[in-house]
Image 1 (tube, protein in one colour):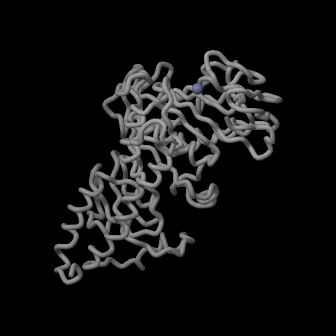
Image 2: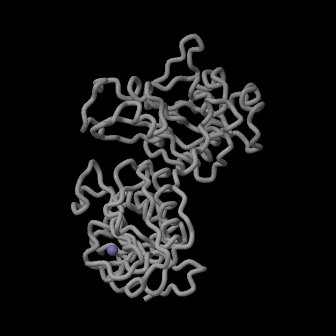
Image 3: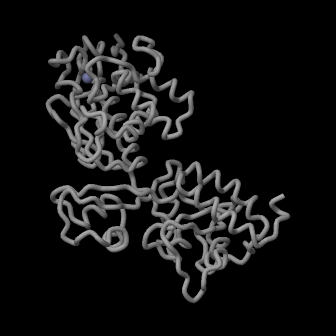
Length: 395
Ligand SMILES: [Zn+2]
């Protein structure tokens, strides 16, 4: 029945609904919007064939659909057009902008007919650390330094101080994107995925026995990788190759996908060669890793209100998604906050039950994340034995 409405009314209605929608914009919402928008705007279809830019250089055979782009501060028509592989002329026409002076405003949305729809830019707040420069911060977030300063933070003094909060619009990265996808195309399209900042982990460090009564043969130390984590005690950062490899990979994916830029501190793993590591009862066979909970604004991991629970949920899932994590210890009262974050992230019930013990009581070991006293400011991650570790055992 939408189709029978007068053509004039449809765009207004769509605009209003899309604005409400845009507040909750996520990749999922974008996909959903792509599904329902074609129905609601069908009353006034512009001519898709009048867009040579997209049809000529877009190899995808997916059908173009209507999506909404939320304009970010300082963004220009030509940039938005490039983002979706459409022409600026089409964008102006679809949104009834003045071709001579196409003014657009941050926070409003534009309609785009495209089959190339990267997820929306994500706004993050970054707190300046001592030693930071505009260039350094821009580089770390893969954004343009002038854009960062002049468009997103025009009121921040050029010579800023530590503690200053900056707004940064980061480009979320789609996991399935092919690394070479944009390599041969135009420079204005969405950047090709940079490789993960991984340091090579040699094989041959082997876990033997159980976490509470074992050792490591040919022990390897977790290499420094300041883009991903810091080592609180390098002399206690020895682990099996299998553990270190999956630990690094999970953190790298989590950084990329969450945009979390704060510190991540790795505590005890094992000592060189494994064996007893005071004051721990486990941490002996190179498969246990303590990770300090990620915090907001350099707060304390002991303080529930300082912990970035959303970031922690992302980290837990990145670890679980390696398929090589056996158990993660965290007290039940802290898991409560993790559950709330899981729900905010849209995790389905099956995932929540598979991953979290809470709201079951301690002792109902039906989740990967389980209660163990003392684990309030850090998670203790236990990795699996590798298939080639024939003498590796569980307790
Ligand atoms: Zn531990």
